[in-house]
Length: 243
Length: 261
Image (cartoon, rainbow over all chains, first blue to last red; front, side):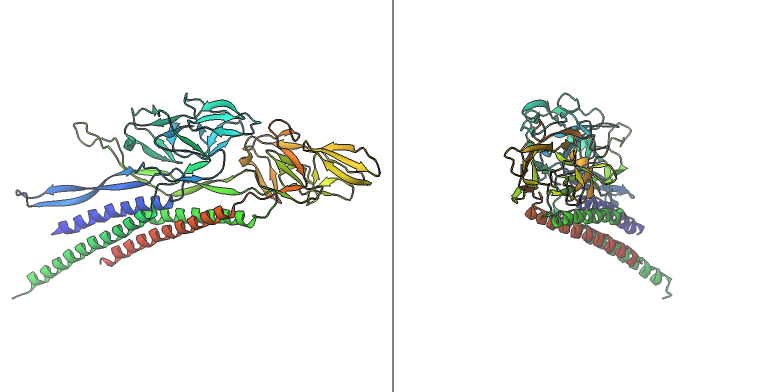
């Protein structure tokens, strides 16, 4: 009998975490280069009797995965904004090492290096920093990622992809970190669009639908627990009563 | 329950976004104004179940763990320094910079400030000053008996005095450039100040390589695009609402939990 309570509890714990995942997606609805996450639930079985009928299945939230589908491209008109149209990531250098991002809101630091809005240096296809001369008038980013300043080629922004993107982990600051042994592969013929940024790929309608689903599922498991509780109470009073 | 605080970060961020948009819209007619954009980034992630951890003695690994992101943060307010459109005023002392560069302004405390707003005036002593009365570098004095002032595209200020047919060159307007214009600190009154992020100013004259040219009789209008701002406003408001829905859902779930017994 106890199991009803614990099964319901396992569902509730998982649902609360799913709500956290949804909350993070919704909070980042307008974050450039953000990729939403999804929860995956699984069944955990526990046998407590010899027959196969005596099985109880609990819920565990087995994992979250990142949805790498493309976000909408929004025009900003700023010459230092760039979006990757198609697969791939920009490579950036941070104090903790190299990471990958879809965030193409670039700026120049006081030394003239191309950096992301979070202050990380953007690397070219050879892994070097990209320097923009101080008196640059026109900065042009070509479709292939080639950066030219006043018509003079400076560097080519590196775009890399991964064999198993689901193994990447999120680091905050819109950065993705490869798993151990996961190698970055240069993208053959990337398409980079200047003056655009890639919006968040979170779809508000989907998130709200999930939100309703989670709330209702939570209520259902609560009802199951309450009913089991009522049953226990009922049986306790019946057993105790003298016929 | 993290959902409540995660959604709260979303609401705070959208509120900041609306504030930035409000300032842009308020300055839609401000000479030389440059619009700003609030930049967001995701916060840190908390692993509940790490990917890559062993799931059996046989060495199988967890392919994807449970990671919970903790919300959103505003990281920067980027000034978008695109050229504003040039508006003809016909006023001889209205100057617009076409291209890159800032007028250098001497503040009363001796520091330099920088501006794109070129609606200049003459002070009582004949000096070229901004509408707030601050001197424009390098300090150009226009003779009292000047009948006409011509400012060339390269910034030479020529004064026609009395009945003279030939003008007198009274000075050349100076411009300053920054490697990272977005890093300048806005002082209000259309003025900016250099910061470690913007880098040291590079001084030059209009028309020099890397510097814009000066147009007399024009001012540079604000580069705020109202339609775009309104679209952003709608987006921000809806995002705010969505976040409040998440808070509602979290609240409802807590209510359900407390109603259990």
